[in-house]
Image (cartoon, rainbow, N blue to C red; front, side, top):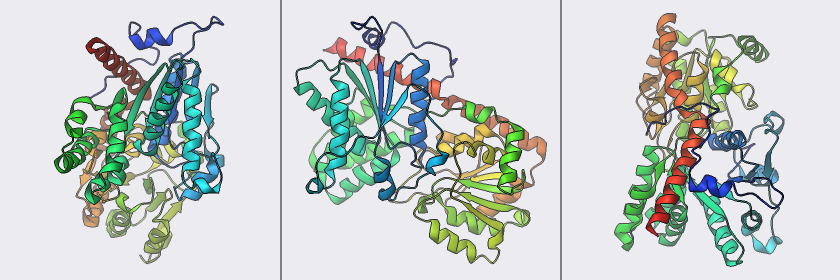
Length: 457
């Protein structure tokens, strides 16, 4: 599904049942409507933490009076092993966006449920205070599960619960939970996630590939247990590509880019860039091998920006190349620097490869790079990457350092006119993922879904 761009100033459709409900006037004479997003928020290095920020920012533009991101305490994130940005490098949220990190409930005897209880309890409070609310959860487990439990509790109180829900499934929801449970024969855990997902007013997937992955896993569960999850997913799940703030990448100051590169000891077009998590499924090991084998890159630097579980192994691999001085690792890149590093590179490489624990179900970093300009994008056609890049990137086979080397040779020696044309096509393709377009489309789909269900009731 291609989302057509609309003006940032355009208002969502005004005749919807959701808009009417949201515009009810309170006793104080002020219209209120709330957006709650439940997600692993900053400082987690994850495209969907950025997506949550982007959706929250658009909600303010669209007149939501109360915008909250409900996430986990920072100390819990630090202890989790998740790759994190430097705290002082996280950009502030706009005034009007509140990030809540509920404290755990209970003592040590509650084990892992303490923080989930804190999150669920806070959602119950938000759902029962009378403010019309749209609640969106990114990652089904545990966030959609928390929303579903909070709704059940809220409705059991007998208080009004004016809440509509959107549940967004990403790749790891399937690979880490549903598919692994199906493979292990753990029906209950898979059923819990799929049921909560389908009970949402609008279940969405971040790409067509993700939807098909969900359906295939559900078919496996249905075949074993006689359930009907797959057909329900096929009928109800919509596609909603990740929301990206295109303005951050379309309007980049050349002077500031020069300053950022100078501080990092880099020159425009003097480096090849990788910027994402350092995990096996990202193919950084193949990139290191391919880069060192590329004759055209002999005078360039490979910049590997990010953090993650493979950081130590990748540094060891770089040391073993014989030319470790040509490979630079940056684990402290902040949100403000990222667009400039992308704009200044000779080529951007994300050679993802499918792994049992992770498949690239979209490729947010690829779209950000396409918006920023600079050298060509080199990637693989795995998972949902094809939906992210269209026909505007250089595609190499999965797990092929030799093909990466060949692509780099072509990319860094490409005539400037051809490179400019390629960059312009990539930027035009990437514009469709603008956060305002995605946000408005989500609300329109939510309205259509709830109106249709009411007409059938």
